[in-house]
Every structure is written in C-alpha cells, then in structure tokens.
Image 1 (cartoon, rainbow, N blue to C red):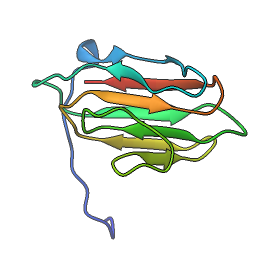
Image 2 (cartoon, rainbow, N blue to C red; image 1 turned 180 degrees about the horizontal axis):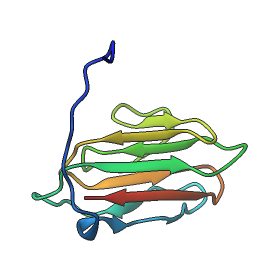
Image 3 (cartoon, rainbow, N blue to C red; image 1 turned 135 degrees about the vertical axis):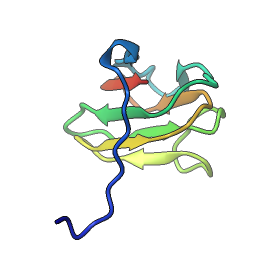
Length: 100
C-alpha cells in the first residue's frame, strides 16, 4: 500500500497531442491553445543549463513574473489546465510538451 494518495486518470493514448518544440530567445511563445476538453498537460525542460518559464493561465510566460513558473534544467511538470500554455527562456532551448 502506498503512503501517498494516488489518482488514476484514464486517458487514451490516441488523444495525446504533442506540443514539443523550441522557445524563442527572450520572448514568450504560446505552445498550447486553450482547450475546454483538455484533462492534463505535461512539460519538460530539455536544457541542461537554462531555466524554462511557463504560464498555464492563458497569459504570456515571462521570467520572474506572477503567474509564470520556473522549470529548472531537466525539470518536469504535469498538471490540469484548460487554458493556453506559454513558455519563455532567455535563449532558444528545446522542451517536450503534450496534452490530453
């Protein structure tokens, strides 16, 4: 038995949509449009040196800005949001992202 509460979410693999790509250096970039039927999204910073900022409230991501969150190099985040998701980094870096 697990010491931590868990939640099983059934999401068919056929509904997974890939939004992976690269940031635009010094500018926010929307990577996922708003989707009222979305259940969860996930994002991973593939950079080994740069912080990836993301915003999942529908606003544009920016460094050190309320509503934007820092994802350390190699960091991974998964959460539910039906709003648009955007990313920001000071240099062009790769990220993996998907939504279902």
